[in-house]
Image (tube, rainbow, N blue to C red):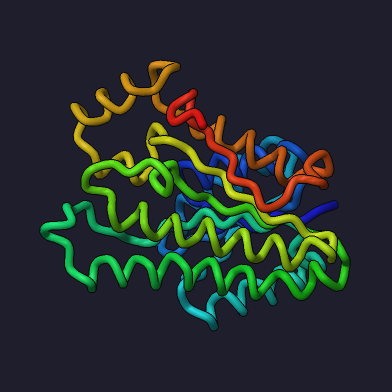
Length: 246
């Protein structure tokens, strides 16, 4: 049975993805940085539904942590077949007028460093097996700017291009790499940084008249993890309720 590693899976979107993949029969690795109790709850939820999961503490911006996590999975289950890179590194909500390079450069560094480390750690095994699914959580902000979100939006735009290059290079090896880009998601960490009034305005701007649900993001990830998506690579899939139709 396939093994799925979800970074930042102890809550919100990551927890929903972990549960959804568990229901599909994947062996699930619930990664967390400092949320052991919540990660254990996600593992218990998956187990209660008849699935199999483990929680692993690792900071995805630290090379030794990432290497140890993937080595643990390799020893226990033989390798990672699906990487869902969902972990959200910290960022500041600020205008460009108040923006410092430390804020922008720091977010760019942690965003790309985490994606780079996780990808580097799992790709060798995928290449050996000539099969793999790499799925990255982006954001509509990478293409649809919103006031105050310059650090996150710019970092996610850089992630988008990184994934396209990865997809191009790994396609001949049977490995796909895709991006899932939700609009603001109910209960997500990013939503907690926005005022209730602003959240209502964002929901009103979406043609479907509401924010995304974590399960809707998870369902899109499940498709990209599946065999049904085997000829889909290098793509950016919005989960947006019609917002920003191109």
